[in-house]
Amino acid sequence: MQRHSLNRRTLLGMGAVLVASAAPAWAQGTSTPLRVILPVGAGSGVDTIVRSAQNALSKALGGQPVVVENLPGAGGITGTSALVKAAPDGHTVAFISNNHSVNPSVYKNVPYDGLADITPISVVGGSPFVLVVNPARMPVKDAKEMQALLLSKPGQFNMGSSGNGTIIHLAGEMFVEAVGAKVQHIPYKGMGPMMTDIIAGQVDFGVAAVPAAQGHLASGRMRAIGVMGKSRVASLPDVPTIAEQGFPAVDVAGWFAMVAPKGLPAAQVDRLHKAVVAAFEDPEVKAAMARQDNFINPTTPDAAARFLKSEQERYGKLVAKANIKLD
Image (cartoon, rainbow, N blue to C red):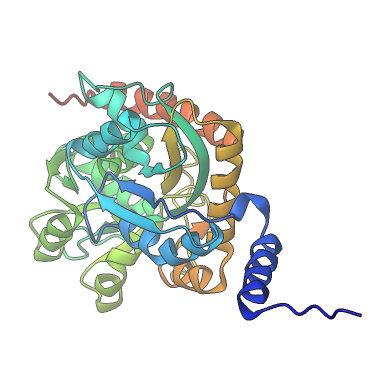
């Protein structure tokens, strides 16, 4: 009887097949990198979030390389323009944020349709905002006291923002409208310079991302008046939401969403959606998100499409009321 044996190369080949077959079909890797466009600068909130999940996303895609590319400019228009021009082949995505839904209302000429020219994958999660004041210039401790002070001196207080027409600007306008006040708006080129001047007493109040404000709140150089979203923040358990304090119309938080060019095949939508959900369920990523005070609750692609449409409509109304226009 003739005996047959398997050589080492054959055994290794069989092992590779078994390893590959152990992973779900949607997670089978490819050597072509996934290009992730960020329409924001390096070091920003969304940039930090995505880079925290970069390795986990690659793992969820079966080892496919993930290359993150920052393309900031024009409130996110530069980066999103690059996305919509990319082929809908599953190799290019972007992580957009609130400004994507604001831009159609504040810019006269946006070179794409923010809803029709993308394929939503998931609104993955977000970051909380907090209303802060210089405690020396505004000796108030809650939203009601702040409302009374603002109404007692119409137009005499100023509000800083990270830039005209940004989500930080609109969040501040949302509060001002809710309390019925009139203030002077001072736009800055970024959240950092705005907070620096709040601390220095050049600006009375503004809205900031919680992680960016934490150190200044702990030192007492700024005071938190209220969280701008629906829920309190774990790292600021004693700071109520503005809605809790009697202003339910104030409800805004930073969010981030994965999108692809329009026309992406359903199979690729499903693959990318499953991968981004798996990436943000990774224990290390979840721990990083908790440290950054981010909340993660990935939506389905259909829910993401509905959310982006509703956000564009909501911000459009707020921009019109505040009469914000950019060239």
